[in-house]
Image 1 (tube, rainbow, N blue to C red):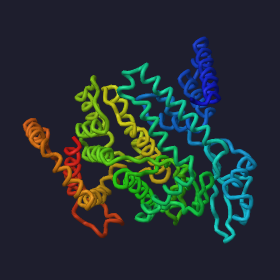
Image 2: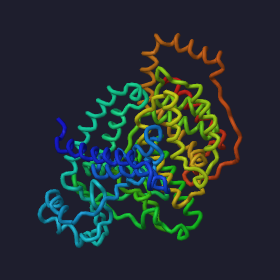
Image 3: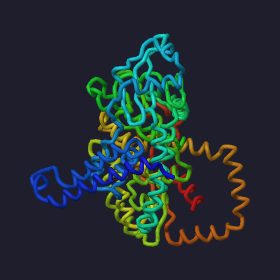
Image 4: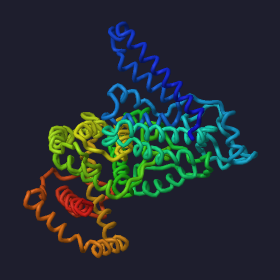
Length: 507
């Protein structure tokens, strides 16, 4: 059974929201007619306040909904984007018992000094303090809020129950928006935030991946228990507070490029990525690499999903609306009322606006998630992972915009594509993959005639084609010195061929 206390709190908050809505119905005139503070804006603010009052889990759900324009209104998206876990600071006396339980009664001997009056960061799940080790090294000490794990667990059970009830009551909505599965993605992503040992493991994996990037760093973990994490202090300040003029144009561009390239590697090669790289979680300092902190919320996707996303971005880079539509559908599934041709028309109108725009000209993350509005309206069921991917993509884009808004996400993707495809080729010729392919060949013998008929049908329908476009020469990149297989066109051709091969196997 769900926690009765959390259930009663939810009912009270919902009651307040209902009361506010009733008051708006009674007073349709007044301030709403006088200016900017409309009923829709007030409703969105009330709902954001309700999520904040309900606690960490609901805040995370609100952050996810900020990337779902197919579910919530533009006003709600604007308000939910403000849910960056900036909680009011609590006194250190509330956290000291956690340090005692996790590090022992002599925990103060672990530090020469700890600033207990001015926390470095405050969030709904934890609070962070600056400290100095006996060696003189500056560190950050992250301490989980007392009782938060039990609260979040109760909320997860409650929301899971409500999602199942909603699915039964609104089957048509559930056909395209699997609320229970979407919540499952949130649950999976949040679990490391409730166990700092898991977060430390995420940081160790990310640190290995960051070693290949000149302008990316991940803090070192010095000590981790389930509720206390001691890590190296990130130099500089959050990217949203950075003085752009303090960096040279070359350094700003290099940091922005490496941040994007690092995230692309997470999405398409490692298939593990920072799910919350908002501007407060990226620290920058002139002469230093950008440091990605807070590895509690991490997304993990499987190979087919990663391949579909890569294929979609490849079609965007090639300005192919129809191909983008097909890739998006492959990421999810069709329903009994899907209108794929209308969705392809929607993408044909949208994609040309994205293909060549810079961050100054276009909010790519919002545009990408806006595809959901079209796909849901056309009866296409989208993978629940799109929510966390959209959140991650929109957050990293927003972070980079503070420092190097002139970058084009698609252009950087095109520059990185050759390295991504090379890694995928290596993966496909690995011993494990060779064994898997052999087993697939053995077990697929009976299905071969049917697959051959499918290929023949595609050929007769002219659905199997490859298009190549000539683009300007690509700029050199510091990680490509050891491998030069040709220009941008070759990368696109190799990528298209490899990804079509993956998609044909998955289909």
